[in-house]
Amino acid sequence: QVQLVESGGGLVQPGRSLRLSCAVAGLSVSTNAMGWCRQAPGLQPELVATITSGGRPDYADSVKGRFTISRDNAKNTVYLQMNLLKPEDTALYYCVSADRAYWGQGTQVTVSS
Image (cartoon, rainbow, N blue to C red; front, side, top):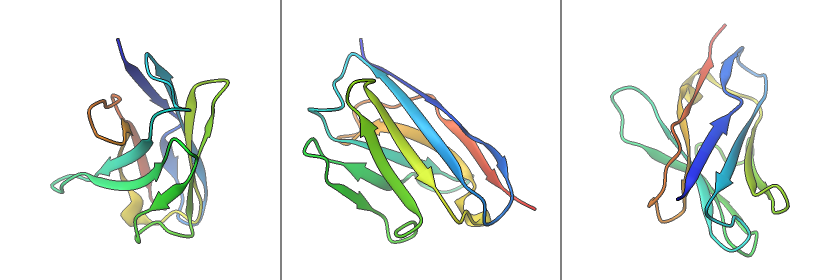
């Protein structure tokens, strides 16, 4: 059974940073492409970052240069480092398999002064 469990969300001021973690069970992050999606109220989910099985990252234009996706193969965990956060980054962030077959429960990120 595949489980993705996110943590690390919260309330943060604009310009600050947060790091999200996704502990994965039942799926190896070293051999499967993984990603992070976010969904703001009333909007469609947006895939903001992916990392291939070979470790190559890719980003949506909206977060490029501010967000970094990484993984720890030994811990079977995927991370999203988010810097220079903006109010428009406010959303529910989901850890996903890159083919979107598997989703975590989501962690809320709110950027507000």
